[in-house]
Amino acid sequence: MKLSDIKRVLILGAGTMGQQIGFVCAMHGYDVVMYDLSKEILDKSVRRMEQLGHFFISAGRITEEQLAEIMGRISATANPEEAASDADFISESVPEDPGIKAKVFAQFNELCPEKTIFTTNTSMLVPSAFADATGRPEKFCALHFHDTRISNVVDVMPHPGTAKEVVDLVEAFAKSIGQIAIMLHRENNGYVFNTMLSSLFFSALTLASRNVTSVEDVDRAWMGVTHMAIGPFGIMDQVGLSTVHTITDYWAKKTGDPQAKANAEFLKGYVDKGLLGFKTMEGFYKYPNPAYAAPGFLTGDGDKK
Image (cartoon, rainbow, N blue to C red; front, side, top):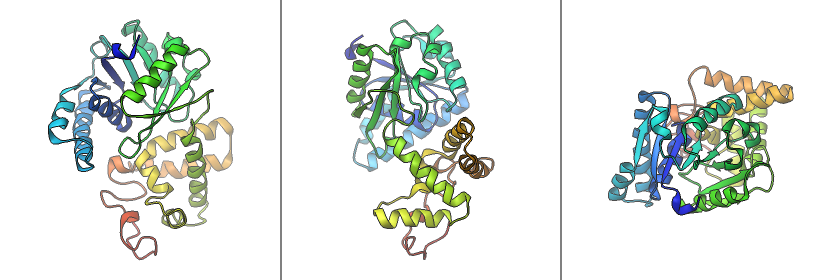
């Protein structure tokens, strides 16, 4: 398969990242099919993709006319057979659980044409963990996106069985949708940026879970020293606290590290209350006007929440 052969992109998992990836693909001319488990989920996802489009309009990246064209290239279905039909390229963004990912890939291996390239957007796992379940390990690798509203960097990470021509094709595809491709030579949990980011999250969660200081003061310390507009807990809200919890809990169980377990429990307190961050309009902060963006936050004079 050549890059020019890729016309139809299937997004497995219509959550926050699936929405962003699907929109960017459609923005660059690809026909996009969104797949998830129910029409209710998909209807909400498509509405949020249009909202994302308005964000891109406000940022000067697209026009109103272009948004209409982009949305016209996006369809959605909860029927797996319909979703898989004539798919050229898959991007998967289902929950960060190797068992779930393996099950989904095995299902779509049976439904997709032989030509279809499979990629995973996993944040912290490695593709070899479920490559065999895809039924086409030579046509499978990781293509990991960051928040497309603020970043156009992706990680391309093959596993030992990925064919070189597939790695080259995935790199070319990433560039065709306006991304900077970071090419990994070997598998690494967390890729490049997320390896650095996970260390930041671990440190921030440790400070808060041990009650060394408040969530707000952790962010103030980071923002004040680095002159960044957001701190680690604000970033976690953007990533989604359910995702951060799933990853933290996975590694806590895998390593048996007591502090990692404490950090997972700290996050669970928010997740159990449905406070998942930006996507639920409340996590560590309340949205759309989080305290960290308010005047006076750094000096402690702004709202605490």
